[in-house]
Length: 314
Image (spheres, rainbow, N blue to C red):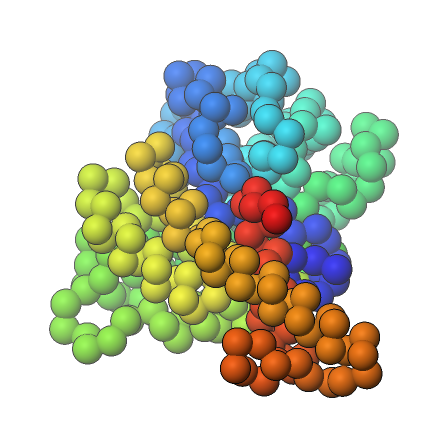
């Protein structure tokens, strides 16, 4: 049983915060293991200039080989897109050298299920050739344009390696024509939230596939109020985590994606009441004046699991 009340094809790793670490910066790479983010991903794509792609790849390999990441931290690296001349070397070189050090590979700008199938087959070939456990390395996929969103259901189910579907707000805004220049922000002129449809579609596709849905970055790293507002929004819509691009953002995002202890304790108490009632032959329980049935149990189990994953212990 997973933290979310169902058994997915793969483990649901901690991903409240997914922190981007430029692969071209030795300084930032060295700090990666010390960050309080649930996941760190070493980036070879947007944060690396074209002239630095090859050297950054080598730095990421050295970092993964030499750094000691704490137990429980999810370690990922982002390759360049499948339509670039960098993709195949990013995937092959890093996985051949340090495939045992990573949990997943992140694919940017995914437009169709074939992008996932390509990475899946290459990973399998590398694992077989290098004696790695076949299928252990997961895949994270970023949806960043209209074609990716149209195909999101096929993308999430394209491989048993799939672990997350990620929203890329910058490229998506440019591709769709949303009049904004701040990555992760909201434009003026719309009475609600302009991304509700997208977030809901991503979450539904993720849940149907048994994987996680992750929001992209909020670039205004000094705007804590704005970060809180956007993070609360995606948390309310059911997403599992959010990217951070500055260490100061990690605590805020972790806090919002962690149920309060009071909320966690209530969920655990509700589960106990339901278990006692069903053990006595009843299909429902009374808890704090409310009828609790199987649907309530599933909601409480999700919250309880998130609290346990965050370190709460009765």
